[in-house]
Length: 205
View 1: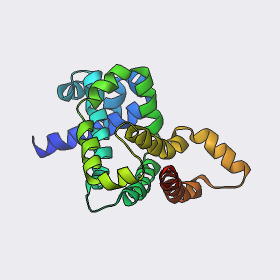
View 2: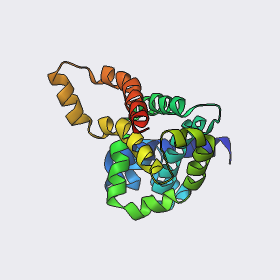
View 3: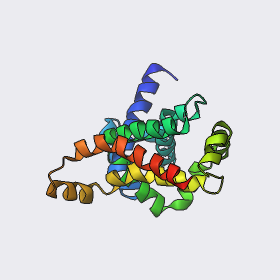
View 4: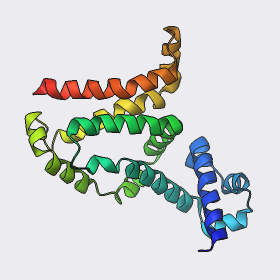
């Protein structure tokens, strides 16, 4: 791939991401993406023959960025508590820069769960669970975290950071009534959510 090809593909990815997030798969048109990227539709089809193909590529890219950002959760030198704190710092910071992403992902998951399931099949979740179990065997035993309850814990952890963004309109409206700035709330939440989860885990012990 030449330098120009790489730049064109990067422009396509950036534009497709913007258009898909704004309009969803059903509402987006290839012409919209071509116009946003400043290229003609024929060139767009040269790189991606169909809208579905381009959407899959964009979704996989977004998922890859998210998972690569949280690679340190596999660091065996970090304790479970440190990983929980790290997750909230990084995840909420990531969502602050990509605030439309949660609603987009939730909409697409609800609209076509089979498609999203196929895309997620490429991700090695079994390795994720097994690695955490191996690294934190003693902590899991201490806090009564089992293979069966670990998914409950992980989804609860994720929900605490995703919900304020997915329901921003409601959350921000409530905060305004008690004179709390949404951005200040998010900064505080990085620590509050981590402490909330850690206290909950310890309470179960």
